[in-house]
Image 1 (cartoon, helix red, strand yellow):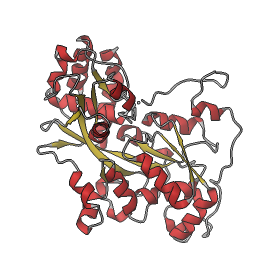
Image 2 (cartoon, one colour; image 1 turned 60 degrees about the vertical axis):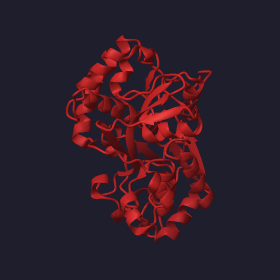
Image 3 (tube, helix red, strand yellow; image 1 turned 90 degrees about the vertical axis):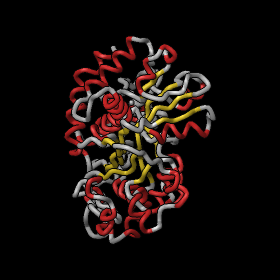
Image 4 (cartoon, one colour; image 1 turned 30 degrees about the horizontal axis):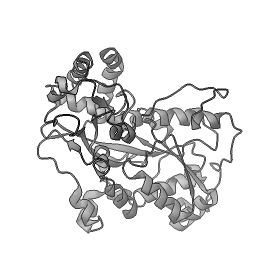
Length: 385
């Protein structure tokens, strides 16, 4: 992604490790350690367990929630690359504002890796408190989420949230093709990627069976090849041809691979591709105007969060005016953008910088995502194997 939320997010690759292995991921390392402090059973001032609180009112209001979260003192996040949606700045702002230590594990992990980590570390103080997930992974794991309504819940359009607050969309963007104009010819269409000039140069941000960015990338390609949100097969077939031509590069892109020239063409969200233009002047970003695919990520609280009050305060921060403006500064479209533009609380500079696509925009429904995910699970590996 471009930090790979490989989402495998844009990459997040699950690995099987033992405690005796010489090189350990953070997740595996804590698996060997004794259980840490777990505040999930703590009660709020109203007598409701923090892990069961469904709004700040269960803590007696925001002041009570802040006090409870500060008492826990820590928050565990996972799969949040610093350059992805401005998360580096967001994490620092939250930590500075509340004096809560944020433990950020596996920043380049995928959405599925987040779920795997929560299952593997269940009951431990190191388990993720919150999730930031692609649609298909989020909707397949709602039983792991704790319902919670932030104070600005009513300001969020109904289409972008579960009615009980089990999940809420946080930010979105458009699928794009980023390319280094100093190393490859300008990309003007998806079909260009099959040309000999792009041999060994085209990378997809992650595995589409695990990563939201990669899933949407395959969907974008499918639309360009005559497919639809209900027929992703042409997208899989295109990548088969790309692999057969020698143009598909099986490398999860990161800022390092882009800046070194290893991945000169990257299919990823517009905001992660755009972040590279600040570091690499020759990096350009193209959103196919006739085949635009938009998507939102899903925010949720782990129902087994070891720091349940801090998890809920994190949600309040993300959906506050401050948090939404910080998302917007990262090039994404925060979920409350329209309402904030209307009431003048979205910063003018970031509102003006949001990309506008002239033409149809495809946003898959949960049902369409589920059907397409099943097709990918059955056919993707064979196509690019």
